[in-house]
Amino acid sequence: MLKSNLAIAIVRSSISELSSMGQFSALAIKDVLSKHYKRVDIVIINQRADLSALVSSRPDLVLLGMEFIPTNPELGIDDLDKIWLADYLESNNIAHTGSSYLAYELGRDKHLAKQRVLSSGLKTAPFMVIKRDQVITKNELSLNFPLFIKPLNRGGGLGIDANSVVTDFNQLLSKTKSIANVHHSDSLIEEYLPGREFSVAILKDDPIDDNNHYSVMPIELIAPLNAHGSRILSSAVKSANTEAAIAVDDEVLKAHVSELALNVFQALGASDYGRIDIRLDRFNVAHFLEVNLIPSLISGYGSFPKACVLNIGMNYEAMMLRIVKLGLAHNLLAIAEPIHQTILNIIPAPAQ
Image 1: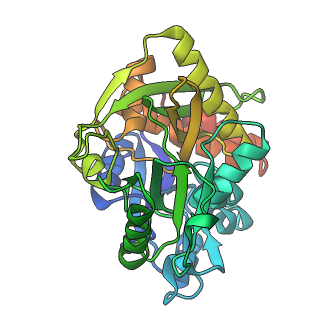
Image 2: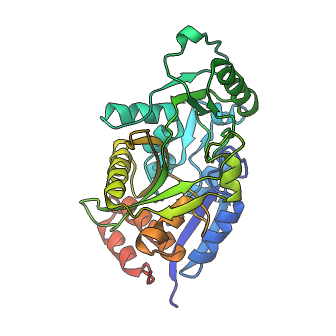
Image 3: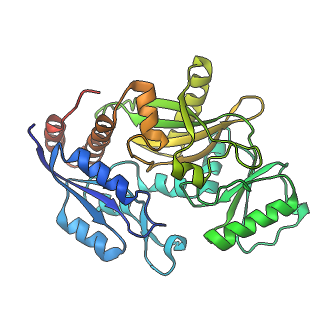
């Protein structure tokens, strides 16, 4: 097989709270991309100097496995003056996968994402935020029990467990205190949606399609019953990969869930690929839960690769090459059309 000379940098952090991609995932991606590209490296970004070194190396594409680094390392994820990698790379004319930093910023804060969804006329459960140092009274609670509680800005199911569904005020106080103490995060409180849960993978079809046609690929996720009789996609369930992922065969339901997912994706300003999580209420109306614009990309693990297989038969290799192709085209089109067209012509397109 003739390999491309394009250099690809797979970027992640060894600081767990900064990285959306683990080492195992990075190695798996490197393994499949190395079949098609001569230069594929995993680059660790923990601080500004690492980011400067990455830019100096001038890769043809950065495959993002993280969103930002803090300006002040001591503040970590709570630093308000973040350096968003997508923005930094674009300002240095370096192509990257995925969305703009504005979409990542919205996706990182579940409260902001839900506000944007609501302002776009789309469905999401009623919600409020309780700050980590806030003392709330019953009179200040405007939502109806049962409620679902999770950290405001943590991903991967962190802080979600059997105690995330609460049925009274004391349980609410206990769970928000736990999130503040363990995860150092504010809490997002939302009215619990008792219906079925779906994860929707969204992947642009053609890198040079100005009409932005996307494959919208929902799957139903069924978590095992926990000690309280609820099916919750907790951190433990996600890590163990014990949730069932099944195709959505009901065409009416599939269309309903897919329409909301794509509308949310566009409302958040996302591009190229991402995952939208959705749950039904007791009337089977779909509601937005949250967005992940750097979803897990491990073969057989995580809902994004599973959705590609179950919906359009796209295997892991084809999926990764599509994401690479989209990143190159999306970012380089504005830089130089001849270069852009040359890159599109030499990127391999394996059979699905």
